[in-house]
Length: 266
Image (cartoon, rainbow, N blue to C red; front, top):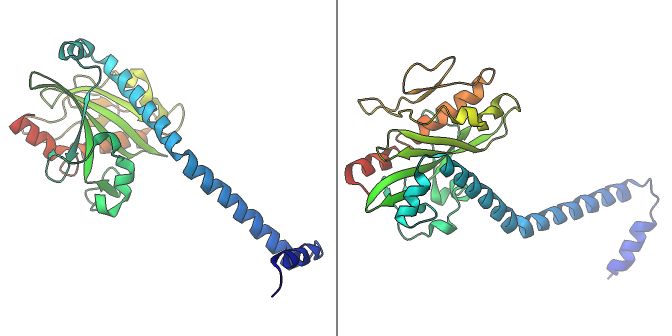
């Protein structure tokens, strides 16, 4: 039986212009590169995830600081962070038996065992799949809800837009909307992260007197409590935010949970 070392030496002894040697070296380089990338990805994933989570938390904290009086309410309640709960989007109730601190919404949305395929006619946010469970962030005092923060996401023009939507205790008034992740065109769609645009959202109403979700991002000037000015020159990004909110506040998003919360309380 030929020695592997002897076979390797014979391979290296082939002329540099030899096709077998050229293809063999190319394969070995590609294999080694793929191995290094895969190894680095696996080893660095926990650190990357920790950085992503830290960035999310920092953005959430910055949003909370923009809500008038919220820090005072938290101080009165004796808490320094919002309470994280998991919601079963199918039933509209709080989920039990799973630690919210270890729940990964993005991984859950990709796993068929923990997600659902969205019907094309319902998938206005362009997600394709949606996790069965979703986190929410609550501030309550003496059994009463003070503010609730809903993580939402949807397709923008060039990227997935991820945001936090904060609602006041009536569950119909927007306290804040902050975009914490996007990759749309700088100077155009990326303006959804600017404070001036974020300042348009507080006080807007998500549903009309009949309970229908009507919050909209409109072209031109907003004229009703249910409308927010779109960004000039960034129609597709503006539409992405519009569709994202309509989806997550509707029947395939947090809609059933919000209805349960209104009817039954915490």
